[in-house]
Image (cartoon, rainbow, N blue to C red; front, side):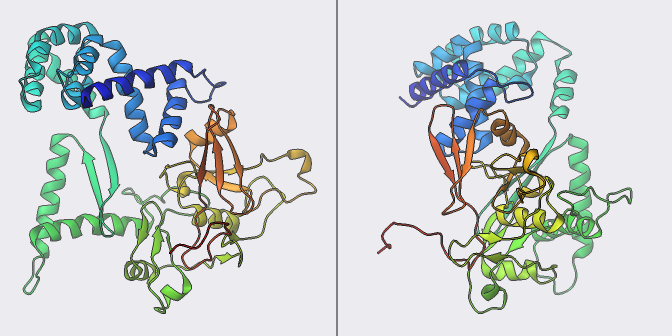
Length: 393
């Protein structure tokens, strides 16, 4: 039943993609528009939504695999192995492998099926190993994933010798750091060496060639933590907010802020929104840009976690050049951080967005007419927004 449900969802995702018309160039593709709606509707990440769209497209291309999934002969794990493009097989070659393996897939484990896929790929093309390596090398990446209790996972997909070089360096530094009385484990020393390397480079503001790091929103790359004045002074233990991660314990927020350059953010006593001066020009000044980045933390689309420092500062409502000489259109209540993808969806009017005046929240309207609310971030210690809801018990 689970396999059938997954197959049915993929079929409906394909239908959603088919019903989306391309936005004017350079607007989002139908696949992107469908992913945006799935992201908002299911409350999942952008990458999770894009994965559902990609899976649906692959199952359309390989109906024998789709049928096996719908009939419950294979599960999602085996489906993804059979559709894996990293084996480097052309579509017709992959179909030939499916014909051979699908009758036996139900009795194979995922690892056994993957090994048979790899063996079949190598048998079909003796040069496949080099080809696969080149394709895999193009996919090298570093990803960050928030974990538990103020921790995060950092994962890197590297060429094998580069990964071994990193391991050798960390082992060497961790061994050298071992001193009498040091109670850290080897893993802890390796982790500390890893974080010290990047913390040092960031603090210096230089790359490995000694050149300045690029500037985003008129500021050099930096960490950003937002903490209430009472918590900063130790009067209370309200959680802080680390941009790109989310809520952190008060003691950790105070530790991060200990050596920081502080910037005051003043909030409206009624709504809790950050307040700041505006400007008549299209481009915000440095103080206003910093205030927007500090307030939003991330892109203000539903569920998007792109750091605000890497986003566009977008006007809502749209900036009107005809009013430039008379009105302050560039204000904190008209600027929102939006990543390039979701900025494009709004600019091409594939999605519509407006600000809810009582709360400052962003209200997004999908092509289907469904609406989604992205609540504005309020600094720790700020009053809650006005509401008609009864108080909780």
